[in-house]
Image (cartoon, rainbow, N blue to C red; front, side, top):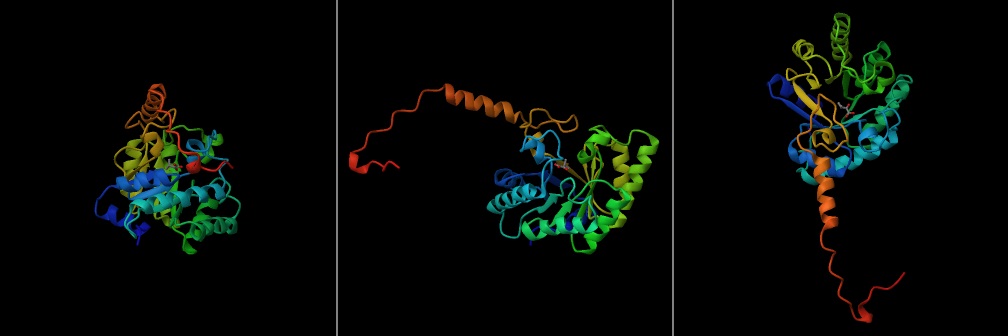
Length: 275
Ligand code: KIV
């Protein structure tokens, strides 16, 4: 059996760190599974990282499912059967904001049409809490996501959240409400370290941080940022290597190298037919 949401909770109880990495295709899925991630998130950041959009808003559920299935194939290519990390899919913008029935239908498609075992969605508005409760009661595990929420870029920008007392208290209330609604884990993005540590201590579900300090139960990163493949990385996610310039330089060196030797001529009878 691949990892399940409950396995992440067991890691928190045992005081073990939880490592979550994003992936978007077979190549990246294989990479992060081979590296030993506990969970793989097919995040809607793929809209920007892979599809070249300016925000995460345009990506569709069909596109997310396509990338999720490819990611799962990559994970399966390097994992012993049943040893795959937990696969989580981000519900894209407008797939869960248009009413509870539509949200159940969208999240249900994720479980029916891909090997993902859980969905992630952003925010903790009262309507979102109702949606989460209904999804969980329908048998669909949900990961929450608060703090910087890229689907709200036109309202909140990409700024750090939780900078004043009112906003800190709101995030604490939201975290508690998401746990009560049934989320199995929570992503906290770009919030002060001490606030993230205090929320982590208050919740029984695992808190997975990005730009939230080291006091969380686990960490999540956009793999393309970590590998230095994206043109610019967010300040809270410095690259581990300069993947983009390493790749560009290697390709330039190859093209500047000696031209490949001419192919040997073959007798006419062996020649491939012309179409
Ligand atoms: O879409 C994504 O990659 C995410 C992570 C940044 C948590 O939501």
